[in-house]
Length: 115
Image (cartoon, rainbow, N blue to C red; front, side):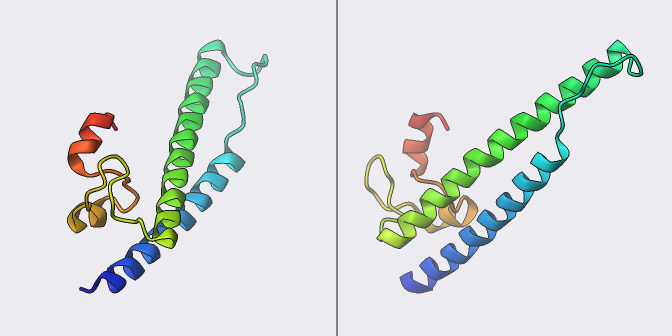
């Protein structure tokens, strides 16, 4: 596969991932109301609902972080630096980019970053 074909495919995958994340974040925000403590709901039910609400908020934050990572990868595609490790500057193996299309680091640098 040529470099230009690889970049075209990578950009397509990143755009699909971006669109999916935008939809999922929007749906999560619409359906995630904070629970209200009222007399009709028992204390344990409220605690369960509150815990679920907090887990949903955490999932939204994770999806938002991934969306930022995908958008940064799309920017690297546009400026011609996609597939180059941001830390050490070596080329990231295609297999890694196929598995993690938004990764900014090669495997050794990713281990050092702790992500």
